[in-house]
Length: 173
View 1 (cartoon, rainbow, N blue to C red):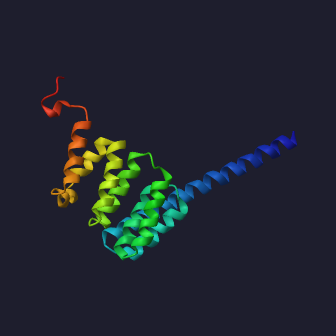
View 2 (view 1 turned 60 degrees about the horizontal axis):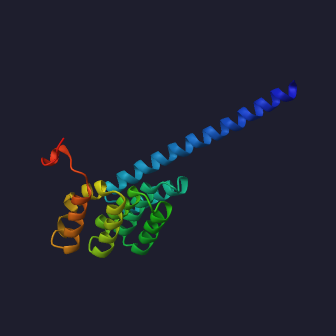
View 3 (view 1 turned 45 degrees about the vertical axis):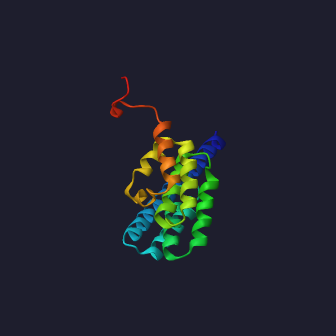
């Protein structure tokens, strides 16, 4: 009887430690993420990189903090390190539309002059999630690409690959 009680107490203690550790890790990640966002908004990229690096250490599989760290690194002029982080983002979930939306966002915000990489990532996104690609293409930061034949073709692809909706006016609903 005493051994059963000891086992229950030990199991409860271990479970409590695990839950507490998870709670504090999530809390620290959230605090660091918020610090990184504030620093990034204020264009204090050194502080943003430090905060996002801490997030990456605490939650390496979370793609948003890794992408934001890459954007901050690129703004600091550390382009090669930023590209390594984006390669990590791609490696984690290469078949997810959200991953490619983050990659497109990185290239448009950090390296807009690299049209080839922007369009390659946008093509992958359009193949995986045409609606998200269409939403991104309609953002003001894409206006600089309006004259590009590749951009125009991508725009047409996303328009034709989506099913008609009542808002289109020509759908029979």
